[in-house]
Image (cartoon, rainbow, N blue to C red; front, side, top):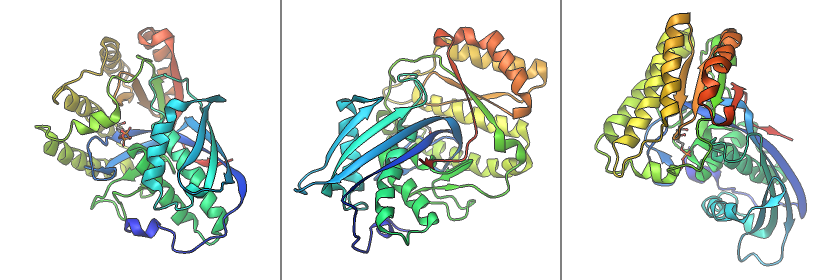
Length: 359
Ligand code: DP6
């Protein structure tokens, strides 16, 4: 499918005013997206677990306005006008305008809130941009009753991607592949697809407890981070590694072999950070406590014959991943041995979820 197919071909009878609301989850990549080209296209295929509790809820009131000269919107985070979000949203509107050609006809009041604390170090771009994309596409769907569910989901992911790459993976659940790969039928660089092939039951309710090691502002924005992959001496090897890891992961998702799963997931997390440590300029985004936690997880895994493992985003927080049947044991371990490494002892219990919901 090409970009052009997301440009509406018909003229719709659009509503004068109304409102739409969606909640959309965050996701955690198992094989990481790091490096992009063109308009938000990934240099390698990635796959993620959709989360359940970490989510953004966005409500948009829209009303037709007279002049169609410019975009017109205001953004509220937790009920407070947040002008600092507006440049990012304006950029998003510019990128999606061809696909949602009615945007300039309306004034939008965008009200948004996250289920996780602000500045927790948890990226809100995946849940936030996907919720926004879903709301705007819902407006189009109100005028086009023939739009199929399948097309709606693809276009929502396509639009979300233009806001933030990882947001393309937040529309559906419980596993989403984004990026063309010969091993995944119909996979595309343009949007994420729910991975519905053979998936072992163990992954259907996998747990993710997020340890908040550093709640400060991100040291490196993802835009700057992805840019570091241009001219990176190891970039090509990294893209090959990620695509190979994705292919190796598919039979593991089917068999439920957790030892092999752990190996790939942890290698991906450390490779992502290795890329940042070896770029120009270079960054260390892990904190001493990140390493302490990793070592404790490795020790616990050995001594308790556990299948707990970790993954990381582009920051210091640690996502502790484990099968549900180990929940009690692992939560005890977290409370007894890991909480001390978290800022103010904070952590968030999440699990695999099934995608965004209209509310
Ligand atoms: C490390 O999706 O935040 O979380 O497309 O510039 O918005 P932009 O980047 P973003 O990058 C996320 C990178 C990552 C890995 C991943 O989620 O795959």
